[in-house]
Image 1 (spheres, rainbow, N blue to C red):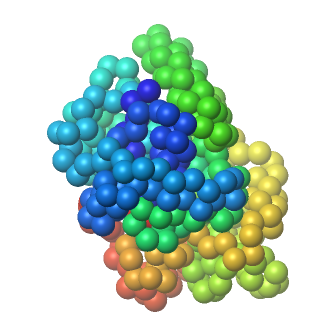
Image 2 (cartoon, rainbow, N blue to C red):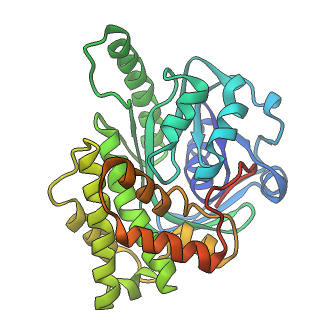
Length: 328
């Protein structure tokens, strides 16, 4: 398969790197220091699943040099998605697949608004990874995995049903490539549920962790922070159910159990970005919970508090302008 990795930070770098290591044809779209590192030194990954190093890579910052691809793995931050969709449009053929891996639940809709429904599926990833320096990553928590699948699981509309069949076949091919690369991959019929489960976990852990200024080991063992974490998760569960997303009855308990299994020093990428003064996904995580809660008639006082407090504390704007480049 010919795979374009758009955004060679922690997420794109790790999963794209594993695919390249396994022999898939990977082209990287990156900018700045990350682009230079990929071209000149390659990619170095320190990982709980085994360290690996790649030689200098096929990488570019010129969209016209990418060419046609079978898959785009989208690893940019959430606020970069609309601009990324415009950039990748020339790379797509009638059989291409676009898999968004950023946090949040709004990326597929933003991609479809530009690219149409045919190439775009839902997706998510599971990993705790950070950029140590351009071209060097450290995976230090969670079993790496990717879930993706058609946004419509079934339809009585013939053209939609046919599209789902085509998308699922493309997803199965990509899943096989991930499995060859040693990465757990699941093609899901309920990817919307998976994306909301991820939001339930990551927006709560990110927001509470940032407010506490502490890693997950502190948050989960402090009674007050743990209680706030549980409340934040319960709010997202309520919003999801109001929007017709069939979360499991024990979704909150499962998310808390996952948090309890993480390495004690783990922090979320949004938390790290806020602390470092970088653009963050606050708008796409806690901000999205507030917005979608208002649309659905569900009160979200915890996320309103997290969103407003973190915006003020870290001087984050209410809406992030489009940006370019790779992410962490």
